[in-house]
Amino acid sequence: MSAPPGERHLLVPAAYVLLLREGADGPEVLLQLRRGTGFMDEHWAAGAAGHVEHGETAYDAARREAAEEIGVDGLDLAFLTTVQRTGGGEPIGERVDFFFTARSWRGTPRVREPQRCAALRWFPLAALPDPVVPHERVVLEAIASGTAPPYLTLGFEGSTA
Image (cartoon, rainbow, N blue to C red; front, side, top):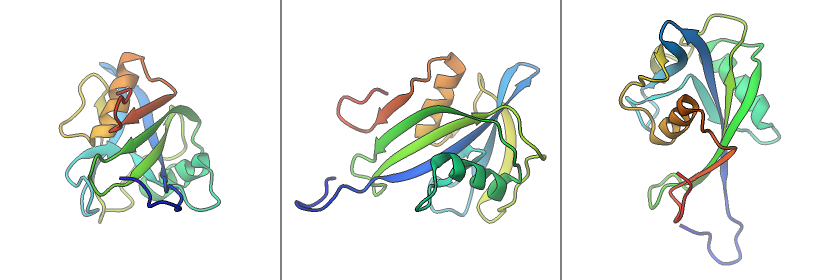
């Protein structure tokens, strides 16, 4: 899907926050079960995520989304990777996703938007639930294997993942 001649290409940015902690069986990640969103409902997804708003950095969007969706602040954010993706004909357009991890924060994660999130749960990175939003699974598996590159592409011919 490309922009008509003479029009600029539109790329939609989003920020993702992956809270990580050490569990009994190794590293764990906090995931939410999407419900009522109209996109990938009944799939597990990052604990907090959302669009980067006009005039906002991806870091600021990550902090805002974490406060709005799971009630935590004071995140010690670490940039992980950027995923540029296209839907290959699906109506998602083209997206650029900024993934951050946090190993420390203030507050106890909790569901703050029950109309959009059915559950919030910790999972070992080595035993992710099914289903996980596909592009997020790629990133989570890269974290688990220690192979997360700074930039990934999905859905493009010759994609890196």
